[in-house]
Image 1: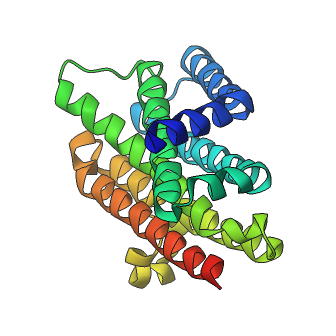
Image 2: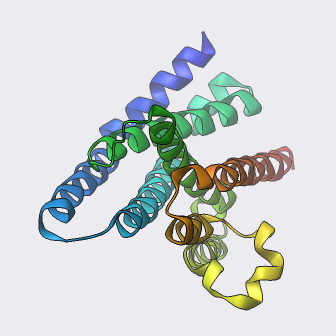
Length: 224
């Protein structure tokens, strides 16, 4: 019962705010324009999709967590189960991101005759969005008592996520960095969707680690 109430509340919160629908429609409009006006090859087009889904997921998650911190304090107290509340937040954003990945890929006109390739492409886009969700969760202090720490954390993580693979010094700590730019680089070098499977798995694990760290850290803060 609580699961259904939480899922319904969180989805309504995302849709009624209009930021997510606006971002999704703007992204689709950009896709249609890009396909009709710009002569981009497949690797460049997919790179744009990766960056777009990452930023859209990050902004949607930040906006959701901001509104939740401002308006749902009493709702959380009513649920009286921190981890259930937290897990449903993450699950809701994951489902929204997966939906976005499916819609964005369908409108990209990159469908192939191999359904496995299409599924890997959607999985790659979705896990890229999951990384944005994880970063938003990790930097939640910006909505509480440490706004500057949270904002600087997001700026730094977004920078290394999009430029990390092009900075040689960061190669030695690549497993600790968001692998978004690695996804783009691998596809440009190999032009194979199937080659993205290991990086997609890495992104999913990376996002889950960020979310678990966030949940554990803020549970301790609330208990104090």
